[in-house]
Amino acid sequence: MPEKGRRAYVTLCANADFLPGARCLARSLARTASPWPLVCIVPAELEAVARIELGKERLEILPIQPLALSPQFVARHANGAIESVTPMARGSKPVFHSRLLNFLKLRAWEFIEFEKIVFLDADTVVIRNIDCLFEYPGFSAAPNLYESLVDFHRINSGVMVLEPCRQTFSKMLSKLDAPGAYWPRTDQTFLESFFKRNDMPPLGLPYYFNTLQYLWFNLPDLWHWPTVHVVHYQFEKPWDESTFEVSEKSRIRRRLLAPLVDLWHAADTESSLKSSLMRDSRTYLKDFRSELCALRAMDTSPSPLRPRIAPPSVGRRLNFRSLAAQ
Image 1 (cartoon, rainbow, N blue to C red):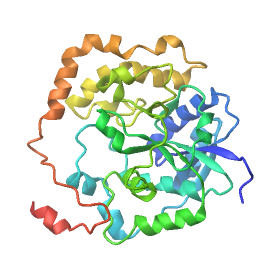
Image 2 (cartoon, rainbow, N blue to C red; image 1 turned 180 degrees about the vertical axis):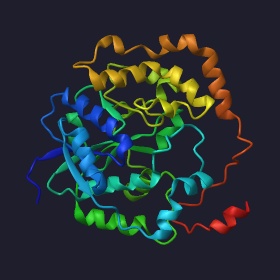
Image 3 (cartoon, rainbow, N blue to C red; image 1 turned 45 degrees about the horizontal axis):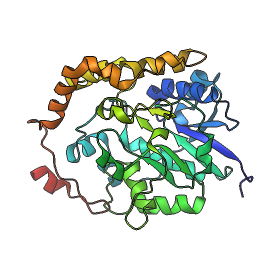
C-alpha cells in the first residue's frame, strides 16, 4: 500500500530532444513552491544523458523499460502508419516526436508508492501552483481544446490526474494491444476508451489546467491569464526553432505564438515570470489579421497531396491492404 497522502508530479522525457522541455517544466514547477516531487521517467537507454542534462534540476530521474507490445501493434502505431491513415491536419509535430513512445505514459500507473499522481507532458510550463489538482478524482483530464468548442468531446493527456494501481495497469495492457487494436491519437484515444463512463469521455479538469498553445490564436477570448495555470506547447516546440520551419503554416504560427515562445524561454532562464510576459491575446492578435486569415484558409483547404482516409473504428482490425488500395 502507498504511504497515505504521498503524491508526485510525473513527466515523460521520451527521447533526448525533449530534455530541454523537461528542464523548463522542472524549473517552472519549482517556482510554485509545491512540496511534491517531480519524477521524470525516461527510457533506460536515456538515463545517463538525462542525469547529466537534468542533474541540477529539482526532479528525480526514473528509468523505465519499453512496454511489451506486439510487432503488429508497433507497426500500426509508427509515425508513418498513423499519418497515412489519420493525417494530422491542424498542427505540426516535430520529426523527433514518436507517437509510439506516447504509450510509455501508462507506466505511471505502476508507481504504487504514490497514492496519487499528476502527470504533466514535458512540453508544458506551470504558470502558478497546481497542487489543487491532487484533489481531483483519478482519472481526470482536460479537454483537447485548441481549435473550437467541439474539441470538448476529446481529452488531452498532457495533464491528467491518476491513481496508480498494478491491476489497472495490467488491464490497460490487455486492452491496449488487443488483436487489431488501433488508437489514432495513441494514448489519448486509448485513455478515452479505457476510462469512459456511459460513452462519455473522462473529462474532469478545467481547460486552463492544460491550456493548449493554439487556443491563443484560435479562441483568444478563452485565454485569460489570471486563470491559466499550465501552458502546453502541444505542437511546435519553443526550444527548437526548426519545428516552426516545416511549412508555411508553421512559420505563420511562429509569428502568432511569439509571446508564448518568449514566455517559455523566460520560464527556462529567469528566476521569476514577469507580468509583462502575460500579454493580452486579443490585443496582440489585432496586428496579425492577415496572417490569421491566411492560416484559416490553409486549414480549410484540403491538401491535394494527402487525401484523408477515414480512420478505422477503435479496437477493430485494421486491414492495411484495403487502405493501400484506397
